[in-house]
Length: 361
Image (tube, helix red, strand yellow):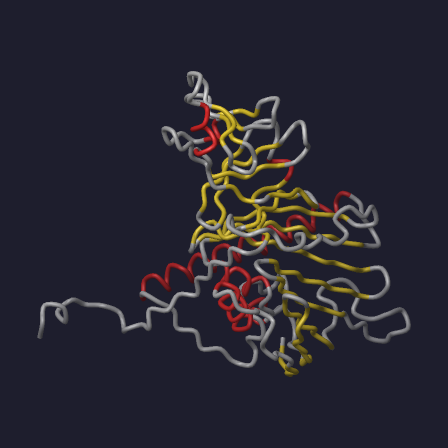
């Protein structure tokens, strides 16, 4: 027996980790209401960023949170009248493209060195209550971020939540769009509290994403039969949009509609920040109903935070993953395939994914 063999260890793992770093895409850095007059620090795709508002132009900036002079956090600085972010240590000034616009104290004839002191910057836009950044400093953004449906519609109640998941981006996205786990992790709150139902799921390609439609399931809450006694059947879609947006939609009858859009932003390889916007059209929108919905979402998300943290801890304990997918895993493997292809600079939409399966929920 060698010295290496003498150490106790878990069974050998392949060492594979579902970590994908998709830079060319829009990622939520923070909510709009989190960015005021002062800069804020956020980390996206492992990049520490200083986010700030441009008071004159009305835009937003996202630059690397480190002054190239003496390594001080630019997020601790201030914004001047020329829309420049000013370092709090020696007053170096940077615009939203990362260009150095001034170094106080330089003598005449030395100003030509200023333009050489630029820092990396990411393109940033404000949309639907979020500050979005394009994850690649070396490329021009393509299109705009996905719109958040019904977030400003007065007929809908919009509930906002933010959660930090201790897991990979892939694990967080799969969890958000995984129907089978709801009967166990969320038993009694979601599915799993009554008899199981056989339903049909159809998976299809949508632009830069995947959609699965579930057909034949009774409503998860509220009346299950109409006044004439006929059964009510809800419509349900789960969607994934590149590079990190999950969306779940339920329609029940003419007046009950819920659509939750869940942008996920990688902070690091094993930490993902989720920004949830859940929009509900209901027959009754009194404050008590809204508080009940908020409590329901908080409980569901807390359960997901816990199970994902445990999953990650176990993956790291074994030194890698051991995924054994079945026909029920309609989203996870395809999300992973799209993330990996995008990371490699390939078309994420190339595979044929159409599938129809029957399942029990």
